[in-house]
Image (cartoon, rainbow, N blue to C red):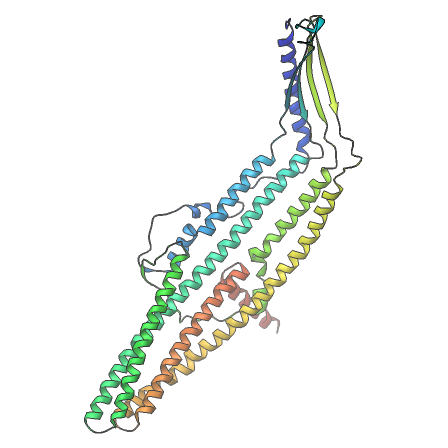
Length: 463
């Protein structure tokens, strides 16, 4: 068997294949290349996903809770991993089809003159699929947009985590206030019990009043234990936001009694486009249109070009061979794929509108609750609590002087502490409402207040 010229043939084939590969690269690049974005373009700080061994102990602030949750929250970590997976898919989408190597030897091991290898024909061939219509660039664009959508999912989840942590922190802060209020009620009930007992011993009031005072004292002790259990539950809920099973911190630090005016609903609606659940749909529409463009490109047939060489053993001769095959798009022109992609574009338009309307609906509902809580808290702060405090002090002083009976004092005490409890609850709802509004508008509450103030100033200037 003579392979004298086979190395030469193989070398020529490889040279031609590299030239052919370069041509395929140029053809497939197309005009639809989309510049690749980096993580910084998506404004996502992936350093947040790095675990830390720092444990929250002692007194913690909302900033401490948020920073820890952003690092340790398992759901958020999973979304950041998905982004990296989509980045890997971008690499895969930009790869060229692999060439195909074919070696063929025939006319040997038969009978008669074909028993040996003297009449063998040996073929070495390389084939390459050439993608036309910019399919590769369109795949890369879709993969890049999928990565961007994963980034929006991360932002949405990040906003959810921020809101969840903030609301859980507010719950702990409010429950701490409730425990402090319950302790105050127990201390006050103990003092009242001492006063009533002294008056009973002095024969100034009936022993039944001492019994009532004892009942009130024990009831307040029970309320204190309930408040402590509620606080412990809210502490654990806060700890779960950063993946902990137990709360290692002692208490949270913050103020509930700070009330900022609620901006107008129009000012908030003007910022709702910052909501990542709504903002993502611009990228979603771009991705659906890119998928439609790829579906249309798939109806363009992709040729397969083959280059190789053949050796004829009986003649000791070599020859080149070249072939090209092109699918004939008679039956399958990707009609179904194009129709499917077109319908998904239409679906995305409807989903985008639905997401926007849902955002406005949620904002209106949250705004109603926030405004109500603000009005209630402000009224309790400025009118109810000062009046209830003054009334209780006056009745307590009058009771010592024998001017009022115990039932009047007990009623004033109950009114005061119920008002304080109502005030704490109104503050809790108010601050949690702010957290929900910030989630819905995708920015801080201060920005909405500033926007509202600008609108008010503009209106006053116009008037």
